[in-house]
Image 1: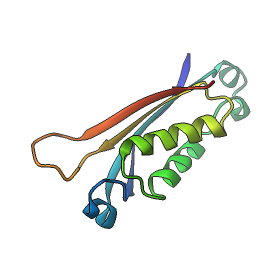
Image 2: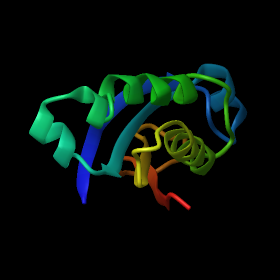
Image 3: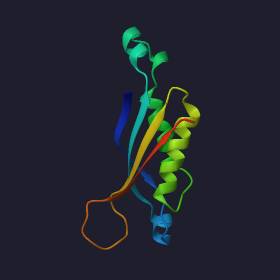
Image 4: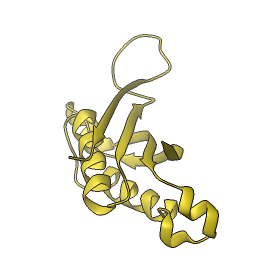
Length: 120
């Protein structure tokens, strides 16, 4: 299946279990991959047969920078449901939510969750 990917989108949000996360906020990095059929778009050079990735970006931005969630799992689920609910051409979606600076001790690059949801 064909895919459209938006990689390493960076936003500032207030998601987290700890009080300081909800108060101070932090960076979130989102990877989004949607499966769709791009053949007709490629053959006709017409955006009508594809999905506007600029609009995908703004939909993700609205969620990540919007109302806070306690869990990044919930952020991922909200993004996935928005994609499947808003774009009939999307057959499945993968969402990865990365917290590069979580407030936990230790040495690591980041923490993340990844989910995949399919239509139907």
